[in-house]
Amino acid sequence: MLEVRDLSVSFGAVRALRSVSFDAEPGAITAVLGANGAGKTTLLRTISGLVKPASGSVSFDDGQLVGRSVESIARMGVAHVPEGRGVIEELTVEENLRLAALWCLKRNERQAAIDQVLEIFPRLQGFRRRHASTLSGGERQMLVLGRALISKPRLLLLDEPSLGLAPLITAQLMALLHEQTEGKDITVVLVEQNARSALSVSHHAVILNLGQIVVSDTAANVSADDGLRHHYLGF
Amino acid sequence: MNLFFDYTLNGVANGMIYATLALALVLIYRATRIINFAQGAAGMMTTFIAFSLIGGGWGYWWAFIVVLLIGFAIGAVTQRVLIRPLAGKSELNPVIVTIGLFVVYEGLIGAIYGNASRGFPAAYSQRGLHIGSTAIAFSYFDLFILISVLVLMAATLVLFRFTALGLRMRASAFSREIARLLGVRVGLLLTLGWGLAGFAGSLAGLLAAPTSSFSPYYMDLIFIYAFTAAVIGGLESPVGALIGGLIAGLCISYVGGYLGSGLEPLGALVLLTVALMSRPEGIFARPPARRV
Figure (cartoon, each protein chain N blue to C red):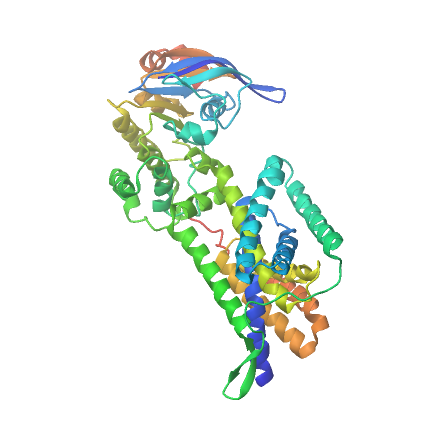
């Protein structure tokens, strides 16, 4: 279980997060929604250690994350898929996958894990030796999602996976995300601007506005509340 | 024709030394986007350490190996102590530090050993080999240069292409943040990269010393030639450093042979200008085009 308590982050005079608190349960997807500049990306970057908070705590399965290095947080089973499809363009598809498997899998287990991920994304199968720079937006998103899954993470942080993707591909990705997390002991925090598609696969939703949590409820309740949707989510 | 053959052999042997120092520059540039202006001077300094060790009664090969390791240590410590604290600030700051180190290294060695030129022993004979009864401008020592640099290049390629450590190093160089998110200890690998560069720089110093006038300044021109080689090769590719080193070595040897050795630095400058005008991204840089 992920527990965020009173988390505040400042960039100079700008307060990006103000005393943010929420829980994310294992086996469920928690959507973090809100407009541009609400602090969604900063929240994920703080959880994964890329941004140091001014105050507050983040604990995951009783381990404190604040104060740890990015790489040691990753090695606790936290996979952060950053905004903008963070493939390493200069590496091949297979090298991108292998890199994620290095710290968590033994040498003789890595190839099987890579093959398993490529079975989930058959489209990438034929591109194994191609540089990631040659992939399309949707293919890149498959690669980063596959790369995150290969380490069998216990906490998966996804930042705008649907950004710039066609609606059909977004729907496929969301269905796949649901399939990969349903009934498993994995905690997922999904940051999305595309609130409609995020709510369709999430169990819980928090809405951020100007760095503060204004709503924390089940995804079904948020979807059903017309006033809330119109006011904060624009649909 | 004989002269051309000799200049070519001479160019290959010198080009290998430029390639080694260019490799050191490439290892650092691709990992940390810094040109280490102290790389040549660091190689000079470690070679002076070898000079003292040999003078103190050490065997040549012991001194050779120990000095390569000292070069590694100097590179790693420089990154850890002086360069890493500057991360996240202006990109110019670490470059200024390397220029400062260059001045410090040359000043220090000048103060200890004096500025006069002296001789540095070679591992093998520097007398020209014979083909039939004809002497050629290529000695056993040149052969040693050729083999040791090719071994270093091959080892570097194997490291980067076929090992998990190399994959981690490439990932750290290309995308620091993503590599960290995937559990790669980037800081450690950047230190290692600087260490390997120090190793290569030391090798270049040791190989260049016997054929140069060995003084605190003997690596200055070689650094300029190596920089030219690294730029020709694209600054990011070890293979580019090798090919760039060969091109620079051959061109400078022809200029020195046919036009006079005084024009060699000018030849390097012309080569650098032509390379930057015709292919500014270097021969081995990957084209930026991509399908989106």
